[in-house]
Image (cartoon, rainbow, N blue to C red; front, side, top):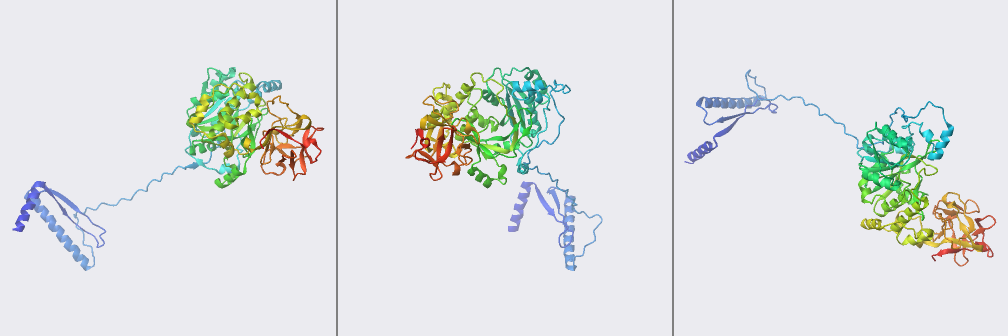
Length: 625
């Protein structure tokens, strides 16, 4: 009864599903099962009787073969003879094709060096076969503040030498760096100089990294910068020309050109530069790693008279700051040397953190430049904008770096070839005072002690720049000095400042000597309350760490009895001067030598300390102890 019940249930399942799957195993091969095949048959249960008989025959055949296989295994694994018409479902194994190995692109590459030599390109309207006109050459120097005559007869794409340090050639850079808009702002610049800058940028750069070379004409009046310029750049699709409707001056022109640029990185160059091989990648990579980084190339010199190129293979100084809001060159501090040794396998050409930038040659993420407030639109033509941007970058969360492996030649002219759209001195002073009033905090009064004649100068509305500083949550000027450039003393670091007066109304006077190495400290007549001149030559400082200094360099007694100005090394020795408030002497060598006014020479010297020498007694205009 149970069996009948199960058969009846199976019959119902078959009727409901409508079909069944029956697997028949036909197996030939050795005991190690190297050859196996499976035949699968699907059929309907409603097939006619002949089909079922065939199925039964196949089933019997399969059983016979399995029995034969077992017998052969028992007899030692002999192979049965294959029937000629036996059906074996064994797919032949085809040889596999070897996988194609796609070479992986390198993630890091050496800097592009533009090794391809190009045929020289010249201005199309200059006849090179004419004899040299010396008088016209000299006239061009006077009018253009450089040798324009020679420039017009020099290839616009002349070769530049690879003057990098050998370790720069070993460095590898990320391959996928952001592309730059190289911005060249010009006003009445020589056409050959503008074109040479633009063509050299293209020649010495990896094309993938140049989005465009943007020429921004600040409403020039020179005829050669009209149709001739457009004609010469027509063959270069990456050169784009934008013309201002009216002149704005260098600062505003850079501001407006940045808004016209389209590349991810802004790279400002003066329009009288020549980049050299390998210059671009070192500027871009720090920005790719940190969008708040600002990078500056190493500046080499293109002689304004001969156009000869000269420069060092690395950088030995950083950009410093003085109280006149000027950029000055200062030795690399020990803290920066130690950082480079620790962080870079080639420390001699590692990037240098710098407190300030020199002029307007720098690279910066374009969006970050906008977020940080671009340039101060209230500034005049030129002057101080580099320092204002330097303070803003550091105090508002960014960083600035000199890049020794990026070398750019620059024509340093003896004077500006253009006017300042007004009084030159007043324009620059206005820019400086705008900077001081926005960024100097509690040190602002000290700035006006140095430059009292500027205290009442009208510099326009500052509300927008002050609001920007607040919105960016920027740090204080004291923080900048303590953390970025501690070499500059704050008022709290001083013993005395201002005029240093001795007998007979005589005062220390730098006469500009602290602007260069080896300048002498003079003895001059005090101002007697008559204010200071533009360079504040009689403003001296004596610090609590025993530095006697002008506004730039430190006094040094190690070269002669006459005090000289040299870069402050902060190592004491011949630059250490100790003040005795009781005797009012400034002493060295354990009190044996004293700073002395020599009226006969008109110099300040070191002499043996004497109780009766009135020219060894000094009073400070501003006392801090």
